[in-house]
Each structure stands twice: as structure tokens, then as C-alpha cells.
Length: 391
Image 1 (tube, helix red, strand yellow):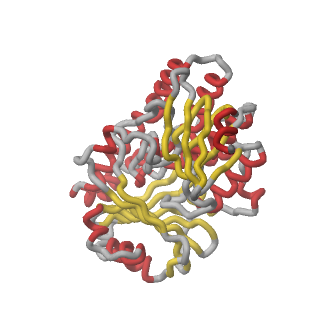
Image 2 (image 1 turned 45 degrees about the vertical axis):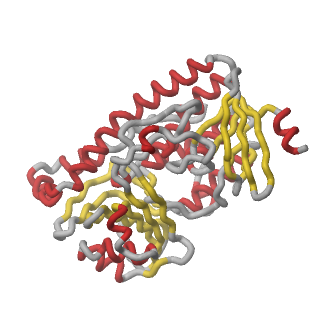
Image 3 (image 1 turned 120 degrees about the vertical axis):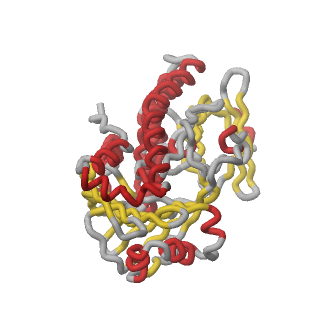
């Protein structure tokens, strides 16, 4: 009976994925008067593999959404510079273009969901999308399973915000199927007992890099992107994996030795394949990591998730209101997403390649010869602030 009711009642938008991008899109579309269903197979709030670094551009978008951490009793830490530490002990530092925040994804997701619920968004968690089918009239049928309960929803629009793990019912794209793309593993854990300055630290080691950033008083977030081969020989626990990575960077090893993992904050994700180009559309729009997996060392994943949600929400709102045809919805969003993110991704991939080359050992020397280089590297992997405000 529930199945039939869902079929008969058309929903404006179903968003697959209730993380930053999906929640932000839900908020923006609900504010425009649309009925929104947000679906995710995970339980919320939850810890996620994430650097938990909120750039000035991300802070701007959070303000645009009307979400103020201080009003939720959350006091983000402040970061003003980035420091890169190589295995040799040499380092390079650069001022960030404005103050960045450190904030737990657990707390951020909680705030975004609260805002979405206040606007009437329906949130369905622990629910797996098992099939997505587009009808001849360009509407969608979305089949879900929550435990033993199966339901089918009929929606005018669908948005993919599911990160790098596509729902089982969504066909994989060609890039994801490619076997020649290098495979990484992402891991994350909070640590207590490690004193952190107002900076994000990035340690290079054999097989990848590890970032340390403060998220609240007395607690830092340690997130790493490591090669699959390196993780395979490291052990099963995230603590063992981070310890193995640190064994090739003495300063990182010293930092970790002073801390203790905070239980319940350990998360890993695999396989991680970095995007070669944005994928804004299949037969529905994609946002966040579902559209573009940027090298984590660039630290702008949150910003991309929020910015893409804004671009997609604008186009989707116009489509739902009949101001755009289906083909115009597709072409407008694809054009804007490529314009916004393609050059950023190319720059980020070049810097990632440089960072993993043997030449990375001379970065500090080059930085001393050309003092503006570190700041350029930081700025070249950032989106520009838009100066957006609520109308």
C-alpha cells in the first residue's frame, strides 16, 4: 500500500546522498518551495573520511545557506596557514587566502540536516537505492530498500550526491570502470593530546600524504590518502595504517606518538580514484564527489560540494518551474559545472603529480628562491569567493 501511495504522489526532487552537497541542495530547493526527499544508506550524523578543512569559500557558502555553527554551540577552530613537511624534514609554508575553519563532519552534517528538516525536507536514512529508471516524460522512478521495506518513488528530478560510491541501481561511468587509474585508500581518525597551531599540516610519506588539522580544543583530525599497495601491507586497523605511513616521515611519527585515537571516529574508504575530468551528468545531475573527486591535498572538497550544489539547485529550480526544458537543464548545468571546475581540477592534478614526484624534495628550496610560489600553489587549487548573499 505504501508502495502505491509513493507511486501516485509525485515528488519534486529525490536527492541520493545526504552529505554536505546533498543536504545543501535540499536546503536550497526547499527554500524555493519544492518538495524534497533526501535519501542515504548511512546513519546520520556520522564520521566520514574527510579533511574537515573549511576554506573561506566554504564558509561563504555555509553563510549563504543560513547555517551558523556558533548558533548550534559549535566553535570551529581557526587556521591561517598551510605547512608542508617532507620526509627529509624540509618544509614549506604558505598563508591561506583568509581564515579557514576546522569543523567535525559529524557536527556539520547534523547542522545541515537540522536546517533541511526545518524547511520541510524529508530525510530517509539507512535506505539503499536499488534502481533508478528514467521515464519517457523525463520523470524518474527510484526504488529503495530500508531493511525489509521496499518503496518506489516517482520524482520530477533526481540529483546524485552519493560521493564516490554509486548506489547499486545506478550504472557505473566509464572512468570508474577503468583499471589503469591509480587506486588510493582514504582513512581518517580524530586524535587527542596533539597540540595544534592555527594551521593545517600536510606530511608527505611513501605512498601518499597525511593531513593534520585542529577541529576543536584538544582534538585534531588526521586524514590520509594512501596507495592501495601501501595500505595492504600496513595492517588492518586505521591506527596501524597511519603508523606505517608515519614511519617514512620522522616528524609525522613524532606528532602521532604524542596523541591517542578518539574511539568511534575511525573511518576508511576504498577504492578512491581521482577524477580526470568532471562528470556533471549521466541521466541526472551529479554534485560533490559524485561529480568530481579532487586530490585531497588541495583541501577544497567541501567547497566543491557546496558550490556544485548551488549551481545545480539554480538549474534544477528553473527546470522544475518550467523555465528550462529537460535538455536545457542538462546543458546549462553541464556547461556551468565544467566552467567552474575543469580548470581547477587540471591545476590540482598537476600539483598532485608534482607532489608525488622525486622533485618534491626541492620544493622548499624553490619556495625560498621564489617566496610567492607557496601562496600561488595554495590559491591555484581554490575556488574564488562569489560574494553571494541571500536575496
